[in-house]
Image (cartoon, rainbow, N blue to C red; front, side, top):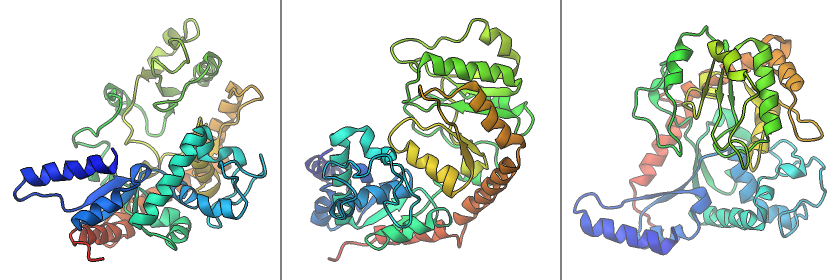
Length: 362
């Protein structure tokens, strides 16, 4: 979707529409390069939108500064391999291997640089977060850009205490298996373990077998999302007799509804990052927000069933688990308050709407 394509799209819409012409642009931060010129041509406002972690946006934006300081090489590689470094003052230290662009090679690194160049031109970025969660890094990024945290961006029904949304299903790469919700409603509160490897991660057969062995041994109810392409090069295979032994206390689905998860629902997390920014996310979940625990792999990269059992016990019955549940409950309440009238995200969204209604004057 090059700028020339967007330019032609706006022309077509404006020629067709007599009353509802294009009056503003919202563009994904990772594809925003060159669109500021399009907005200037039509004298309409433009905002970029960064959907993932605010710190991820800041880290990518400040790449040129990190190169000039000698912290990164010109190809994005860290100068001090495997050493924890505080790349940005407002962020926690990161291991060099956790830098998100390293998982996509030079092509991903160049794309991150282009994202920063695009943001510098647009000057304004919306984020799916709230100030009370990411205030430090928002302040850091705000020295260069106008940053508007307007999250959490989920349907109002969830924030008002409903068990699930009655809104039309949100767009998704995969279709949700909503039948599992009826089963979940029959379980005791906070009694079900949810296991999901995401939409793209590919795991080894050995790793799946470790999770299966632990889930069987724990004797707890569980909901496990297992894609048909979860195992690289083959269909996922469970240990012999596994499904028959756990059928009465489990549901195994292709994809579970996503909105019933995480901070806004007060759900603590166990983190096993796979690639790109997931390692960065784990750092914030575990070390900054303190609402989860890490799952550590062995020397072969496998998370053993004993490690899973230890982490779950810490989370559910340990003292640190009690603190984690207390903290995530606190953030849940804050996340819901911030989008109410007078909340920080509510106010930011109001400012955004006002600016989107104005013609550009510079």
